[in-house]
Image 1: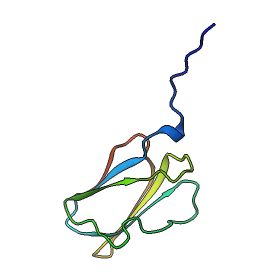
Image 2: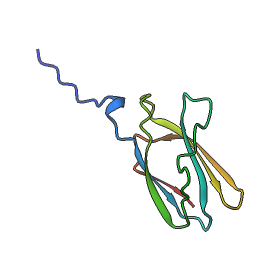
Image 3: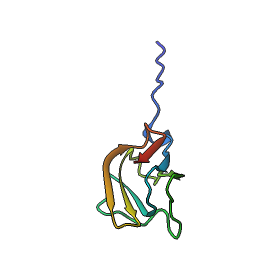
Image 4: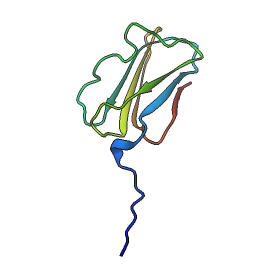
Length: 97
């Protein structure tokens, strides 16, 4: 008997996501933490920013195998937007409007 498995393991999934800023404000800090983390970790943008109508591709592969992440964007006007349970293994882009 021959059995074929076509399922892709979680560790083999693409975790690159294009973050799109379609707002009129600059994202000055951006965090992406897997669902197993208790903190936001470090600012992914570092010394960079993500201006209005701009995008950046981020590889969220942190070696844990998680597909669900929480995102936190801090804007230059002081607003903070948190989006939870983003399945980065199933999306290619995420847009802030």
